[in-house]
Image 1 (cartoon, helix red, strand yellow):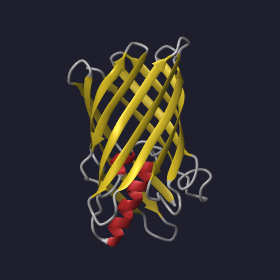
Image 2 (cartoon, helix red, strand yellow):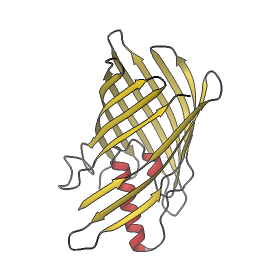
Image 3 (tube, rainbow, N blue to C red):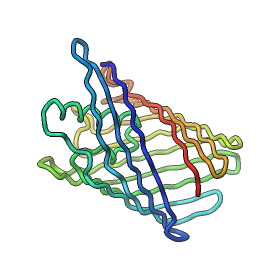
Image 4 (cartoon, one colour):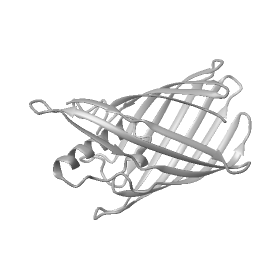
Length: 235
């Protein structure tokens, strides 16, 4: 199946005081695909806008620890007709897998995600930056499907070379309901390169899923990968 996917995302954050931060992420996805012997089909849908409040438990020049909570209204739903529902479901699946399941909450259909967010980061004496994330969550169903538990965990390491920081990130999603078939989890690897020239920053990455259901060792032809490019400014 030949698939093209584009998903713009806009994020913003504001400091509420010296130790409290609020953020919001809004996204949409357009996916077009063609099954052999059929006409090309496409779907455009909005993701769940994810809003967080995070507190700085430790914030120093070379290390930081944040804890917070995030929630999203159930914007990611299905149109209603069987053909459109099939297209939307595939759109959501591609949007999730193209990021290595990093933004899982934003593409969970018919659910209200409520997540606990834990973030840590440290810059070692040598110019190496390491970090970890752990996000347990409950996805409260808004239809007849049962609610489910999920967790996203990740670790990353990068080498600072002036304004450029290339690195690698490994992340995992697991949940109490199958992602597909008998697979309850998904591992992914991400190669990234970040550039910071105050007040501007640029983020780029290539995400590749590793195991089933969307990875290299899964079903032939089901491997999903994605390239992301973004940037912003500190005001």
